[in-house]
Image 1 (cartoon, rainbow, N blue to C red):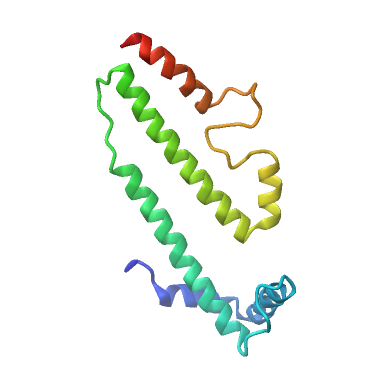
Image 2: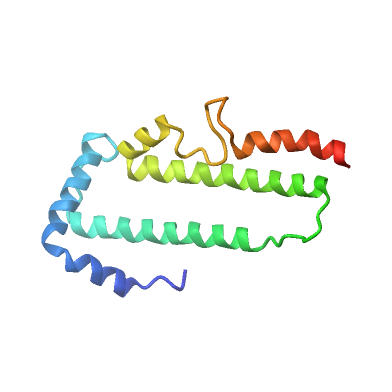
Length: 151
């Protein structure tokens, strides 16, 4: 996390200082109304900024770990069908993990957009709730049986 520049982040936040106090108060009032916290903090702006810094660090950490996970894997050039199906299954697992992370972030940060997207399965990467859709997951299931025959 040494790449995170606190000064730059605070500078960007303070450029919008006029609305920051109102935004911080609205943020904490929503948390109070939902029962997530009991009272407004003494300094809503400072508490809000601290939470936003923590959230930004967490988001950067997640994205850098995802990039690391994906770049650690190198593809073999001449895979057998069985090896290819194994590799594709690994990638499908990664897609499901990413899908779960996206859902969690959307649910916490953008609840209205999450509900709308979830209703259509927008965050189900590689799969679909509609059994008639062609999906990566469905193709992978078909390949598993074909891969066995090709071996």
